[in-house]
Length: 160
Length: 190
Image (cartoon, rainbow over all chains, first blue to last red; front, side, top):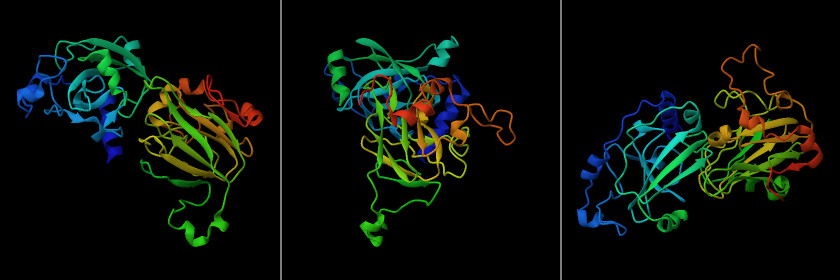
């Protein structure tokens, strides 16, 4: 089944960049949790709480990856948006901590544009742009553009 | 072959799959064999750099090689048309392997290599980034000893995939493997 899921994702990657931008605002509205329980300790805003709902699927159910990826968190993605994303990342407590965009090097070299990519919430705290050699789902060298909603100190706590 | 943390055994070029539960029936003395040769599947913390260590290895025929995932998610997969139309780079008569994804740190996959020759293999999610390895079993013969594009234009090779440039650049030479027995990636000391 995992192979099938991977094949599906790979096909999605092969189809190219024709993707549907997810309605993260709608996902926010669909959260079953009361607003008070979704308050983030770093912010007075009401962020998404895991799971985001809508078209988002837990990445570990789509491809062979751990539920919690050290350094990033628990990831969700709308498969239709692959490979760019956004991938929504949650910490161990289920709080949204970042939105991640995965941009293949070959698309950068081809000067491909990625526009109107949605974000998980605002405001952002900082952004990391990190090279990644590949992983199931995006099996080619690419960049992770990570828009963090928490401090670098809190982001570092995701290492384990 | 499927992914997972369990050990999986495959004899390339010989018997298929040794069951863990069967071994005791034959007695440990009859099946006793040297410790497997270990190849680590590595990554830095960011997933920016990935590698097999050693990247080149010499073993005599009949040796069991064990890959172990230390970080990140990896596979060990033989260059063979049965594996997603990759070009043939293991000896004729050898059985290709594919570990599937080894997701958990410490997961292992074993292959016993009985057919002499050069065996090239790759990691599915990291081949394009140059995560490949080479094993010489006894004698440096077979498809893996030939140039990367030896098959181009030959009958029956339609659809074969070429070895990516990033991978070609990191394979250690057969001569170096024969001389050093174990070749470690640049920047990795043993």
